[in-house]
Image (tube, rainbow, N blue to C red; front, side):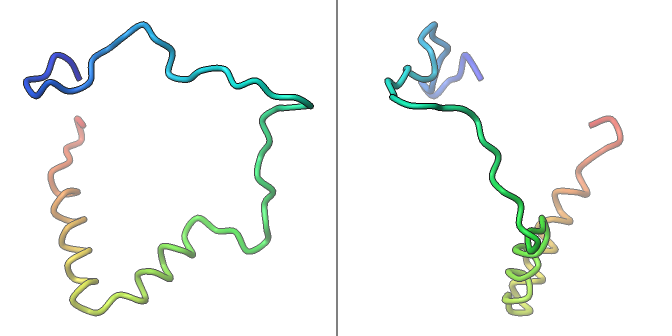
Length: 73
């Protein structure tokens, strides 16, 4: 966000990246899907490792932020 009062980043006309010389074929490739892939397994496994106190803090933190959301947001 600019301008800001902390002397942070500002917009320039420079590209975000520079070209990289390569040899051979290149392209965008999707990572192969695996049968055990799931968007929720890793998060669930981590949650089950939490102590009861950590679980309470996580839920209270999430609920506190979600409670501030309005239908207009």
